Image (cartoon, helix red, strand yellow):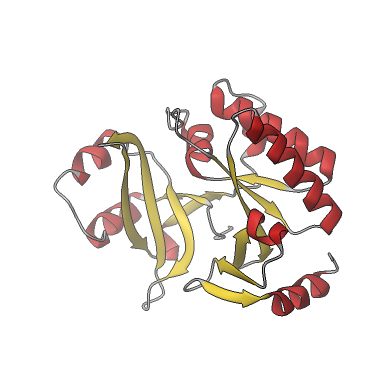
Length: 220
């Protein structure tokens, strides 16, 4: 079972009870969302608590004051029943209607043309997985791609920019290693340092360090 960043996790009933008890910054309004959408999957953050529990989040098809309703918590690994990774989600778009499915199909076609492996997370992933209305007019399309040769990444990035000119906004993470992700835009701009996430805390890495990572993968 994959526990990578952004994976959608199905919990046992015991796991849900544990999550509810361990939620961070509990609010009175949490219970309405928790009871209304009991089948919403947990989102894996890729991080753990000092006790070894998985840090997870719940994102609901509800905005309050323009802000997505979310719950943060933690859960023991034995409470997990299944996981759905970002890389598996684009396949759902082929059999789904709606804006999220359409956008994912378009970007999956672009990724395939460029030879880039594509995953999806965020609101579009939740809409595909749950068939609940997550995307709204101000939503970005959250995508993740696997590290690939520079010319493939550049072709994909340029395709994204052409779509952005037509009003289609995508926020793309580049997966450099199992616990190391950065923004594709930062990677392509070739700044001297790049902010990376996916581990215990964000880290600012030099281009030299990142070059060593890409050379080790064979994808320069």
